[in-house]
Amino acid sequence: MSRPFFSIVLPTFNRAHLLPRAIQSVQNQDFQDWEMIVVDDGSSDATAQVLQKIIAEDPRIIPLFNPHQGLSKTRNSGIHLAQAPFVTFIDSDDEYLPGHLSQHANYLRENQEIDMVHGKVTVVGDPYVPDARDTTKVIHVSECTQPGTFFIKKTTLESCGGFPTKEFGEDSALLELMEKKGFRLALSPYQTYRYYNTEPDSMCNQLKRKMKDDSRG
Image 1 (spheres, rainbow, N blue to C red):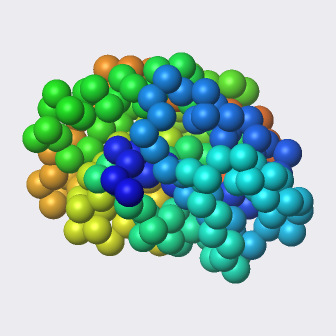
Image 2 (cartoon, helix red, strand yellow):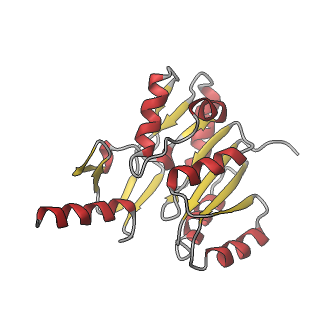
Image 3 (spheres, rainbow, N blue to C red):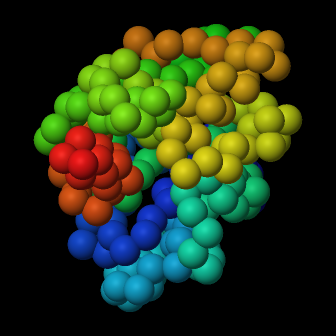
């Protein structure tokens, strides 16, 4: 069996109600040369049952069930299983817009010297998130990195050791690490990733609530 062009890593934790939307947005792409590794970070909801039904209908989707260990290690365990030359990501509460995979596949084929592509997102919900460099402040999503827009050569990820283990801001930390190592990074010309900042238990919203609580003394 030939390797797929993309390995898509989807980390999830107690997102059974959102997983079908994220996965369907991948299945609906006009580019179908992919595998998807769904890494469950010790969920206690119906994630396993939801995945079982989806996987029965699409063998390209590979489940991995881990004990709870945090987002960086969850993504990294998916990267470890990836078979494709390029690894990309989707968060379980987000979705791909039409053309996301096909346009980036063409871009990577036409720019083979590039090690990593990252881009901007379309936002649903609050467009302000904590600043990874100073979580007592908020910044607009347009100023952030978003791992769902990352397309990275697997050899590059392996050279960097995957995502640094951090409670928050592991995506920007990886970007900085790749820059320091001299890898060739490019900003995507496409804005084809839809980022949802609507879940109250997301890390971003937990940190923002903490800011409000701290400001009240």
